[in-house]
Image 1 (tube, one colour):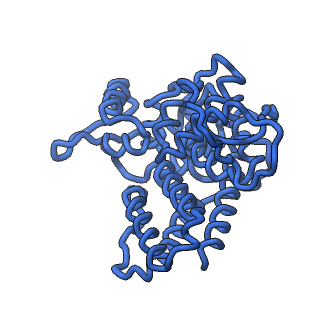
Image 2: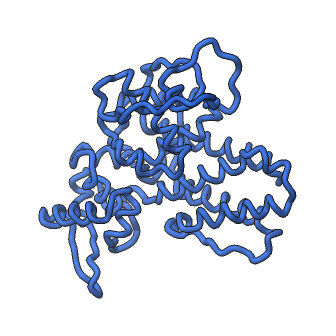
Length: 334
């Protein structure tokens, strides 16, 4: 498959995935899918800010949803799941817009970014415009002024995909809700603090403090193996609290790692210069990309061995994309 085709197909698949997820989380769009996993709201927001650059309606409806549901979100985690400067720029622009719509919003930006001499188009295809949105321009991005559509709804806390919001309503928006979400959805019989820190985006020290409090409250069990503290949750007790059975708890996905890797791949595939360089240099660039995302793929349990032959690199990249997309869509209900 040539690179242009790969890029367009990947973009279309990621946009469709984002629409399906957000339809179950409160965007006013029809979806017949019922995801069997618990979604990570902040990881999905940062992911969608990138992939929706090819779908302006999705981008605008996402901001409308954030405006309505900002009390359920963590600005700290939004920043923590960013993987590069592009993520940080898009997030800053979105938070700047939110701050103007709701001046006291908890998710307001720490301050406007410095305007750049040349604004970069936000959307992949954008025609001439008479006016620009000043909040996005402050972050160096060019787009028309945006007004909220007010079509979004609060997420249904009883839907499996929205477990994060249910736990935040019980435990508050913060580290405890994230730790419990991971402990309830992972298939591992126990999890250590380092794994929880990477899954939640919080510092290991803060995770330790949260686990100590949850353990003292008797809602998380801690035990020591080989000098290492390990943690687990009482699934039947939590399922009863949530009004269900243990086998009805949603599945776990390493969303910050999976969605972060896909953003890196998509941005790499859209580089215009890749079309003009030699096959060898293109393969070398793809290999650098795979090396960059290898730690995240390994954390998510995906194979990361690379062939010693540079000629196979692009084929390996296609296989990685297929593997990630399969992991994201497996066990989805109707």
